[in-house]
Length: 115
Length: 110
Image (cartoon, rainbow over all chains, first blue to last red; front, side):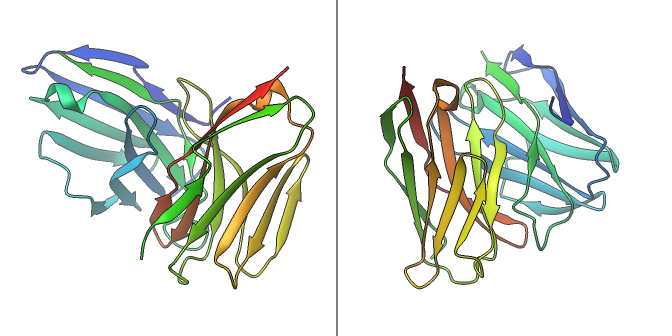
């Protein structure tokens, strides 16, 4: 069982909709991440939160808006998405952003389809 | 150079055989080298990882071999089983950055 929980598992939305993806971890990790993964590709980093503060934004379009309400929760707010944004969105956590930062714990992902 | 080059792209191995996946990197500042296993429709799961001051790490049937001078590392899966069929990603880490290989789709034939 994964210790990073993502909801919903599947989401279909139109280009004018507003929706949110949610992520929760209970491992006491202080860094949380959003990744985007297209089919047959490795995950691409979108955002990094360290100690509940946004530390990295990998030039992600503003139609994606992250939020970290507390150390266990991470949200990704979606608005006016494009069909090319359809992908598997992965949340991950790690103990920190240095040292063993490459030791990420991923959720099962939210499969997003934009019509 | 921030790339991690992974090969082969796909690999078919008979049950009980040894699966070998190779990766190479350029940046000597990388300080942690994890391997992730991903099943269809699931998120990647950390499989095994190694630091550059260690030449080999073994966990069960999975072994990482690390060659610091050649800037190469590889994953060996001994006694490969059909349940090992998945996509494997090598990666190299430095601070928050995790640079991923392109992935290897491994199929174990019964």
